[in-house]
Length: 207
Image (cartoon, rainbow, N blue to C red; front, side, top):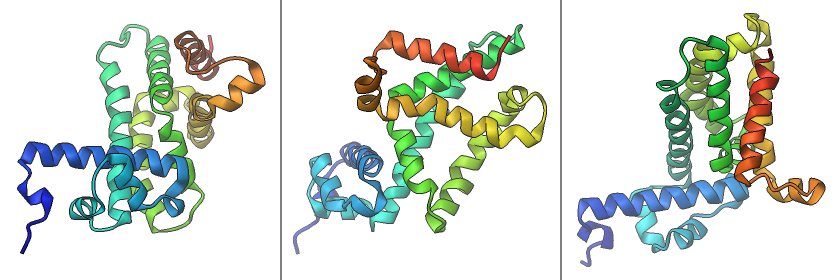
């Protein structure tokens, strides 16, 4: 019997292959959504054979969950990593800097917004898993850090603050062609990203 190609790969090579498949899956699911994206297309994007993809991931749902892990892991690393250097002696400025970092992370990874919006309108088991595994912990982390501050201490405003942040920080980068055609501004430009980060921070934490 012929061994599967991945069984002959060194561990490091296999890990790199798996990572490449997950990255391709993130982009495919973000662009096309879960239903329209196919594992065959993802294998092609990753530059691997279909059999190698199915060796690493038993089905499309397992691959989608691995993609979600990657998306939210990137978000956590981007935001939490900035906290250690944020201004601790000025609480408002500390919160603003976390928001700026969040915006910069969304600019660098517009697939996050596309990914979460595609799944967010579906009342199904994947949405339950996504919220319970990733969205709720992220919400609780941000609430502890600064969401409640942005809500003026009023917990009833937390949903409004959270989804205002998500839309305000992400939409412009998720639809760059729309923005550029409409306004003449390329949201991918570094100066535009910084200007948007400042705007969103001041919007949520004025004064």
